[in-house]
Image 1: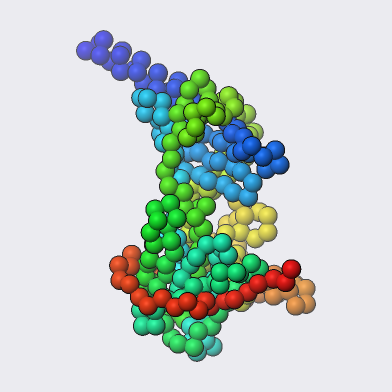
Image 2: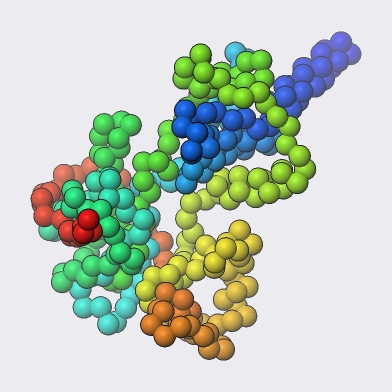
Length: 316
């Protein structure tokens, strides 16, 4: 029994040492000296983040006995999030389209009228906010987009009772990265092509761990919230204001700065905020609460129109 216990602790110690040697930072060149390549951070708590130009991918990593690391990025369950509220001023159905990508196809509609492309094929210059008010009152919303890595479409449905004002967020294919693997050998990561390795593993300093850990945890957290608040031009403040997003405490901010009317679900500032004339985006005097609507997989096929909702192009 004593020998068994000793062996167990030696095995546990070996596992801890292996994790310590793997945790650290790595760099993978993209071949383009201008974009900074890919910077990988593997934490000892098995969270990871990959930083590259304009993109962060975060999630969990695990290693097997063959020294193959599986990276499982945190991705949204569906390519869309839908939030809704009731606005008595809206006669039909109002939708703000957030983060839609002019390079990727996405469709919206309802079970009665079918679906249509959100953007035209030549869309190249999208304003903010991107809003459309449909004449009809939707009883549900159908959303669809191709899954490029699986060569099929993802279709989902949102059912609701009283809402008529919506914020629909699209998560592009760059955010919906499936799990992938790398081999860990001689202190380096080998992705796909075993001939091309990362830089040798480097230890992270304590100050780097604090700063990077904040972004890793932020990227690994839930993509969306159950409720969000936004002003009349859809400036969503629930994820932070300005550059201090990672430190933003939404609950305290609303509690100490606003009066809340539960009958209308509207927040009114206790002290008037100053905003430049015509700058509605930064006018935070009135905020509206939106509720996340559960999405369900849609198995039915609906009539698909060729006519897009928006046909927006910039002049060269």
